[in-house]
Image (tube, rainbow, N blue to C red):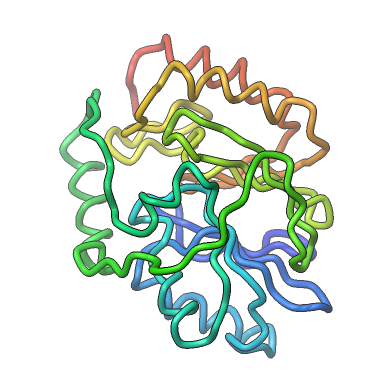
Length: 242
């Protein structure tokens, strides 16, 4: 789905990833779930392009619902996968510490796990080879994405700022639709390794110039990244609804 010039979304409000379209080729931000491969092919077909036009995948963190088809692209088409050094092991092995689940409601929770199952979450292909990146790196990929360290959800969580697309993708640094409660709006994402650090890391994007904030779960949010931190922190202290 096209959101704006150069900017497309794959998936839906349950799980999504993003495509940056330029004359020099395609950059993907995250790789969703394995079943989003078909979504990728459809979007590329609509653009008159193919997987051979994909120059790289930038992963916001190494969880299974963000690396879904990355290894398929890497192994079959030679597309490099860029991951923060502190999440490289997670992307390669799936290792993740146990974390508190927090509040949930049966309907949204079952919807999330049902969708994930249909999209192949139980058939993960971990990324066998990754290119490690760090905070502040500007990648030699279409759109010149900039890496912004956002530790908290995982040690190597990052935001990906793409000035060409007027956007910053934030992975699970926040959500606009809580997958376990169904609550919508800017708020903390569940399953974070260190929720307090995740909230503090939101200040890392406050000064970025962008009008799209793109979470891995929930609708894209239109507004300045400078407004995000206060809103998410306020939601962290509020009641669960929806």
